[in-house]
Length: 283
Length: 55
Image (tube, rainbow over all chains, first blue to last red; front, side, top):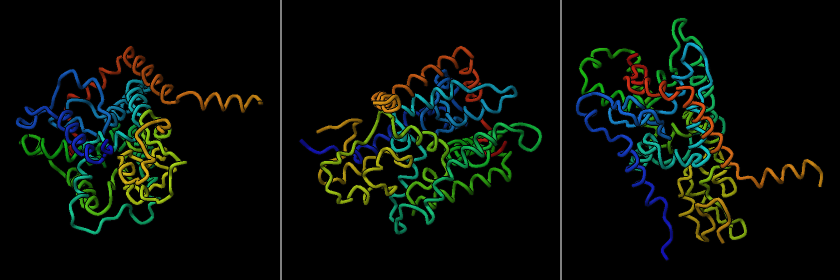
């Protein structure tokens, strides 16, 4: 029986998922967004709901919209989506189901710079996503910003998916919106460009250092249904898995670490086949 | 086996993902009856000017 090769199917899976969840072709052609009933639900990954093709809502956008409300109420519906996706998949969502993760993966494959897994000071910078989650998503969206109205601070000031999937296709087809471009748009475009250029050298810089959605799903990683199981008794400690791991995790931390995106490169690299997509012992 | 050892071994035996999944479903049901899905929909069908950088 041939060996299961996750990385072979992952790219196709990511592309297929992105096409299906952003398949509203009419929107791209006319500079409009989908308004059907699928938007009652949130997609698991970072998928801007202002993307002309987006068929579902963005979970972070929905969370911030709930926090923006005049009268505070606990956003049960959005938390429900986080708990359901998180407990089943954990950060498997990041590795397999996120359109912006796919874009960074594709850029990292371009052979232009000498590739590096992480930025210098990675051990401190990796907490950036928690700072963004607390600072921009929760505090920034829950309190009055600028003294007048509450704003979805993460979407407004940082989210590169909004610029890539929402702004660029919409502004290129909608002249009315295009005439309103100002400083904020150029700021967001700058953020996007920096992240895209960094992606050519560093593996998924946005996911590793800034993504609040990854921070949320990371908390579920240890106990989610989808796991990569390490058979300690079979392991020869060759560390081929750590060398292959794009976020440089040792075997005992694979799958349970908040940084693991369950991409499966370790499974493919292991010569003794002691890593499997499973939440229990296989052999 | 004292109380705490018994408690921790019981916790370890429970598949935590099922607890998280169950909580998620419960939250979705509460959100449904609180009409929070309508709020999600209402926001998602308007072009989010902040998201595209002109708001």
